[in-house]
Length: 352
Ligand code: NAD
Image (cartoon, rainbow, N blue to C red; front, side):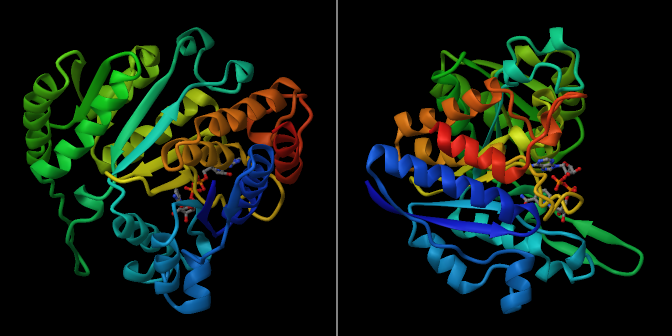
């Protein structure tokens, strides 16, 4: 296959981890005889510094001309005082909106080899294998914002169509998994959540009659994620709840450095990124775990390019290096030897 994948390193550790993912993609291209063109584009703080815009037109054009986009992370303290409309994170929101990637898939399955890396009790983690589907282009993050010196407003809006399309992705995923969807809302308080539950209750039995549907309020979901994580199969929820719950769920896997994500629309172009941010506390120190980004590249091969065998080759390579005992600092137990970002990326590329 000959194709273009846009690489947007972004800020902080985004640069370091995407470099390692590019090595993995190059190793896949070599092994399976593909030709991946991997042009880089600016986004976030780096784009703001270079072009005065966190999502320049050149980056938008590059992404739209590509089969898929692999992103590192954006943001950092350097840009903390930049006005909201120009913050690095805005660039990411604009990218998601430009690609219309409304469903963010975040698989959470603690790696058995990393038992002990999670702060959660080991017996609770057995059998944990969930897919969180977060609505990504609606809700409070995209609503109208107002600010005066003494008051602030963020508007949360959802339409029936926005809810239906993300439910369909959740339903399809559950069909290929264990057949259960947990829908998370706050319907006891929020009007948008009442619509969310109404649409879910109508659509799911009609379009996915064989899928078991569970409804949870977000506060209860936060608790159940820790008390009975193995009971979840597919979780579907709105933008802000999904943002928060997936960071919580990342602790089941031990580190944010292990968790990839895919953001999809109804077509094949997708945006793939680790769930973590730019980690300014460890940036430029060769300490970041590149696995989440390399696993995001595997999701890219699977969902946008339909290269399942190649995706599995990446996942197997990561399992292999973990079995060989290689650990970055975030997943190492006390007294375990630690390697850097580059060495981890090299080992994964070699294992491919
Ligand atoms: P963060 O995810 O960057 O870091 C949280 C903690 O996890 C830090 O201690 C960090 O060192 C650690 N960590 C994260 N990724 C790691 C990895 N790959 N390997 C090892 N350790 C890792 O969250 P934060 O510190 O709250 O945010 C930092 C910046 O990132 C902020 O500007 C924020 O807005 C931005 N951010 C961006 C994204 C994104 O680009 N998608 C997501 C979240 C936060």
